[in-house]
Length: 225
Image (cartoon, rainbow, N blue to C red; front, side, top):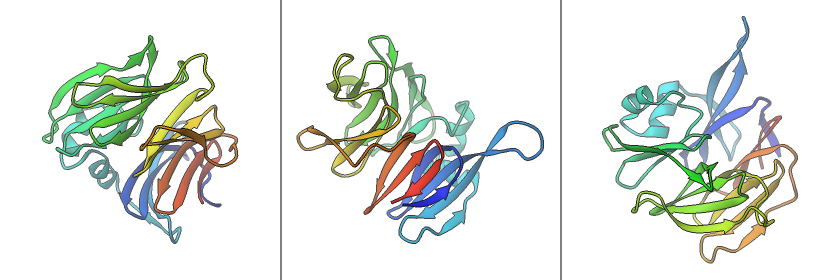
């Protein structure tokens, strides 16, 4: 594995087939606090490029990114997906979510929860989205066609299928779920079987499959494998 950042990663957005935008939390030199630092990394060559905040927002929210980013409080904290009709779905770590049309107008907003616990993270799967519920130890697939009705739930509070799932992502064939700050599990989209992927990784926070590579975010930075 090659380390590409030694800072906390707050967001990752796909840029092209072999490039991703990485947003890291960078301490402010003068005074206290942090600011977002944006860059593109090529997963094949590990080369980095500087990118502007506007370019990041356009890739994350689409052509109406200005209107959407003016509406929401924290543009890097939420997960977002541009859907086939160019509408944009977003969700925050506390379960607050919303849908914008292709012009950036709010169509609806809500709070997504399961048994009273916040549902968060986001992976798109055709007309569905996958999210996870950490407190209920489960991963849920919601239908976008019926305003987020539950389609499939995998795991349960007393089960060990997913223990404290905190984030997920997807590629063509699988959903990847980070669990318990260490374990990575994989759900097959074809038959919904669940399996482990690799050995536990201490401090695991986010995982993304890009081409034949993996982008792994942990508590001590980010790596390309």
